[in-house]
Length: 116
Image (cartoon, rainbow, N blue to C red; front, side, top):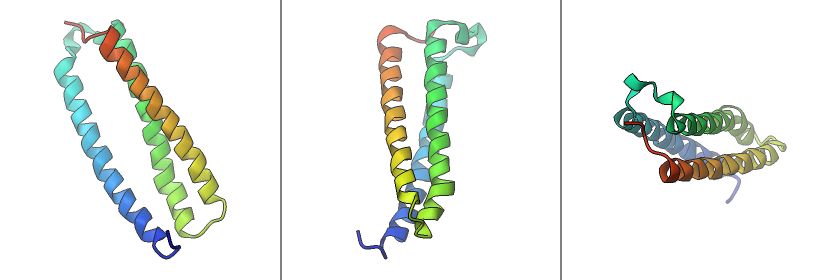
């Protein structure tokens, strides 16, 4: 990608990513509210523990994505030479967290279900 196009691409991606993350969070929250009966203290069940683990990893992923957007993207747009290396490192960590989220989701759906 030519250097002149990079800032516009970063801005477009950041805007789309914010929309996707916002709508995904809304859908996930609605699904949890539908599946989990919070009147029976579901956090003490195996499902609750696994769900809490998944939510913790998702929170870490969102924090890292926020760091990328708020700190690294402006550095990239300012042509900071160390920003690309830092972005690559955080993207690698994001990919590991995504793999962990998918693994936890597989465990959650295979070995546990929401408490009745």
